[in-house]
Length: 367
Image 1: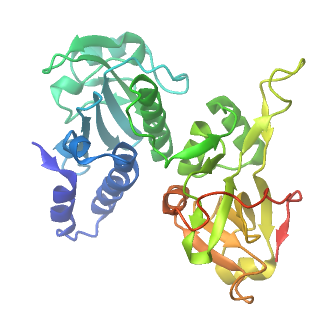
Image 2 (image 1 turned 90 degrees about the vertical axis):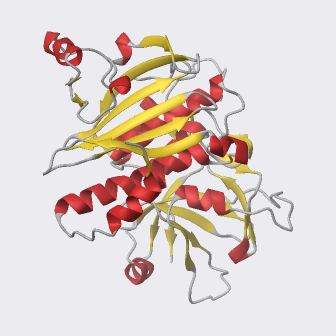
Image 3 (image 1 turned 90 degrees about the horizontal axis):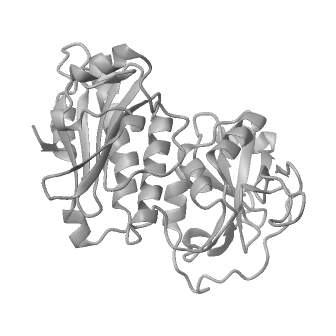
């Protein structure tokens, strides 16, 4: 079985079943199509497009809990991903043209016991990995037991499988995998638009510590941005609808002391990004939780912030006292951080910021 996901999904939606199984499969399919797939396809050219595919390669076969098997192929820079959701998360198989070198300590990477080895030998799975419905050529051992072999085209592949517990973890894993691939394959497109500069390196461990300290789970796209760039100056920085230039995308984390200074530490503290709260009136009018993260500013004194909780979690908004409509200082910019960054344009200001960003007080209240 090999059907393009978009074609399969169009036919699936026509069933119009309102049961829980239908809703679950629809949700996971849209997650793969709208969240994971764009990570592979950003900034590709026509030749590269022909080298990539997103297909349904089968299903789990269970009548009461059928889950499609998703296959993402990139023949240009060898990387295949096979995915299937289950009741506890996602089983993922990876066949890559290089050994991933990022930190995998947060994922299952080893046999747990002899039963794992026996289940794997039988082609059933191992640990929480369940290979039901997987093509035989994509049933792999843990990363610690990864294998290297030649594929049909003679390319060397390093193969392993793992299980992740949520869509959040899956997005993060794929992001890290693609970032690692870009280091091995310099021609691979960056998942973000071109940046003039970037912030200090932030690690997964440091970011987790930040989230625990702030009792917050950052939206997955912004989280991935911090791990990749941790603040940046985008080459395209023009907000068309507000005729404003974004000065910079703030650093979320920065070193406690300047790099190289004696006594410096490896921990990071809150950088330019600042927690802020909306006034009671704005919060009630727009139904936005009070705690938001100021992540950028523009040359018209606009504060751009990210909603970190509630049903609007992940959305990007702008606050400006000198708005075109004074009685409407708050405006919606994008449904996600990625959409906001990708939506910035090259404008009449030639992408050059006109002044340094304003200093923000700790926990400012936007009225």
